[in-house]
Image (tube, rainbow, N blue to C red; front, side, top):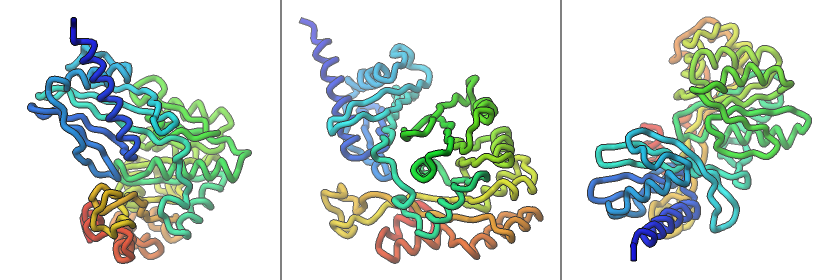
Length: 369
């Protein structure tokens, strides 16, 4: 009797168990990494990767194949990167959107699985960790009929979560407003928000989608990310023609974000006319409240449990507008902004002094203390 059906059943059960364990531990990603003699499985928990299992090389290929089947990928193509998605029925109840990406390496294919937040877990602005003053600033800016709110930071800094929290606030506070989002990919499903998944290298890219949507009576438009000059120009144009725009950008702080817009060819007078608020943020792990950072089963012996946003929220004041028009260097813009908005490092230090996080965590995330 062939043992192949039993092996297949074992692999199916193994993959499902790993997925369910990741969901139960609130992991954001799962890494399946071939290492010659074994396949290492790692969960990203609170932004940090942890080894959770090692699988024998005999099942490594079948594990990747199973993930490909779930994601609707080609199991026989092991020489090219592939991306797919599926919906996971969670043991603890509910469903979760899952994205899977595979990539060939010299030791075999590796795979990364991203577990996307569901509607029930969507945060409000007041839950993210921003100060009361900053929350009020963001709510006020988003309620305006036009302008641009930029959320900046590196990958994994919580930009999409902040954007969705802004959208949730608008939906709850202004039900008569038409709100649409363009995302690549859609990471969090938000009720009563028209969410569109764009194809950056296909026909429905950001620029094509935005030009069309602006003719569909949209009042507030969330754009997943400003990645190039063409997208930046149409975002600025839309905000100058009576629309509220919200978007993200990879930059270190508000001064760098302004400089990047100028480097993309946006005229200074357009930047100051469109830009309302720039948020620069990072995510810091919180000290475990059960063991006070010593390490316990509750925090998986790490000393940390959960994360908080640490952000610098810069409003484009009259003084800052004049400085942008003069195109002063980013270093001087940074000094000007810090007069009214404490820097990320200053706020992170305050969190460490209050015992909410540690100096080591601040150093890990910001590279300084």
